[in-house]
Length: 331
Image (cartoon, rainbow, N blue to C red):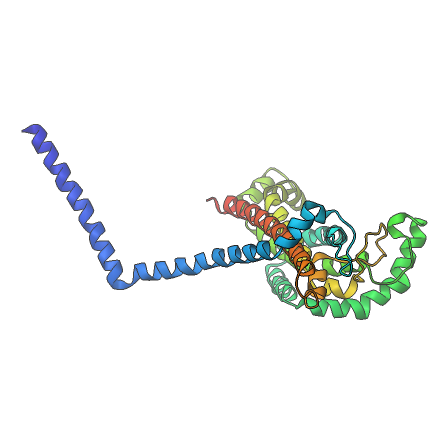
């Protein structure tokens, strides 16, 4: 009897636990809750489906080039559509060089501005500058290209490149004729374009650092700068790395601004003054005239490499930013 009496309440308790769940499901169906959840889930899944379809199309349409050239396509320097010889090495080289120049210039400036806005500036000044940075990030890239052609190219040709060549005594990186267009000019234009991204994301990451970290450092006798340099920055380091990776992803995929100032020559040169080419620029310039066959497949192959590279970099950046913001919020 005791066992039976002990079992019956458990069974009754189980029934009482299950009935509200069934009722809740019915109520959600009547109220449209599940329908809304399914609709939102479908829209979210659509993003993954579109990304997968894009990768699949690039993979399929580059099959001819992948089968003929294989991985040697990535290290071959010859690009001659007339003879059917294609290699992506000049474009990969140009993309990496211009992106490296952009980060070398933009990272110190961007992180320093972010520190000032997040730690030292008045909140109203910080908010106003943050809004301005968001507006700068929304400027179309072709505008940066036009500014680069009208202002930066003559400045590089007349003053900066001759000055660098004279100051370095003919060092290979700064040798050759001063044409105004080339790797260095494209890298500087990219630096201007990606700096707002670094500042904006780094500023948000620094603001997300718990206030208790700052107060603890100040309570131990640290100055404001010591607190920022020794406590806040190490805490926010993964998020700042994420901001840099996001900027790198933007620099790798930039098309119009780079196309207008890089010179568009499919060759590899040691000098930063020399004209070059980038992966995004060659696809934009030559895709319309490629027609079909190996030429089009080679351009699509370049697009596939660029797609995979940017997805990897942007995914890494998002993970780093999420790690910092979760630590800052205590979740």
